[in-house]
Length: 152
Ligand SMILES: [Cu+2]
Image (cartoon, rainbow, N blue to C red; front, top):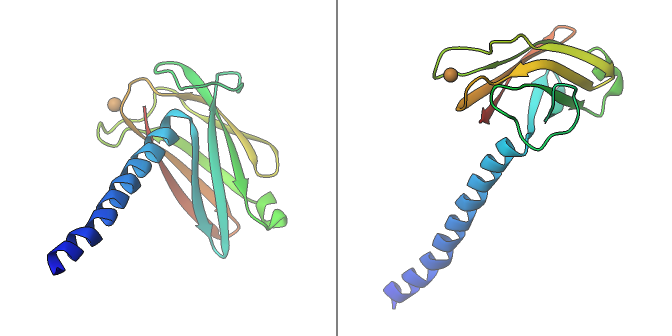
């Protein structure tokens, strides 16, 4: 009886785990190919929601990042504290391949036209593989280093 009960109990969990991991893998791979990347940074008391969307060289919408092509990121920072967000600075934006110990062959530049909205020009992945986006944020005396994985 215990064995039957055990196998009955373990079955749904096993199925659930399978679904869970497939969903997780889907989310991870989808996040990279759809170019909508999100993360959270903590600076002092503030939790900042960060989202990145890949665009083409003119910062217009695209479906995928092409290896070897210069592209742009549209980056949005969100926090309930608008006044605080006004003084948030993106000090550095870079993209590296940690396993290959190299960065990009271009230099990215950050511009902001509106509070919490940024355009990052001159981004380029010159080879496929595991990239890592790194962003340095500063607000007053608080700073954060953000890392977002990007598989291309
Ligand atoms: Cu590389």
